[in-house]
Amino acid sequence: MNVAKNVSLIISLPKKYRDLLRKMAAEKNLTNQDTVCSAARLGREIIINHVDSTDGKYLHNEDRSE
Image (cartoon, rainbow, N blue to C red):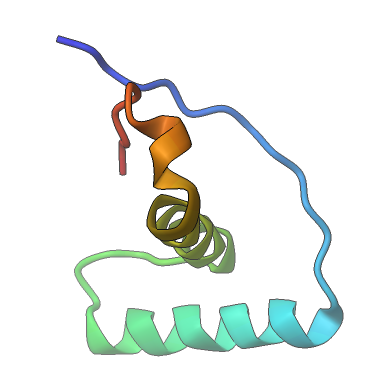
C-alpha cells in the first residue's frame, strides 16, 4: 500500500484572503460540529483541488491523501 506523506509548506496570503478562509472555516464548524475545520485546512483543500484540476498530469504517479 502506497501512503502519501504530507509535508509542511509555508505560504503568505494577503490579509483579506486569510480573513475569508477563517470566516469560511468558522461557518463550516458551525454547520458541522462533529469535525473541526481550520483556515489552513481549507487553504490546503483549495490548493490541492486546484492543482489536481489544472496540473494533475504532473501528479499522475502519486496518490493524493486527504
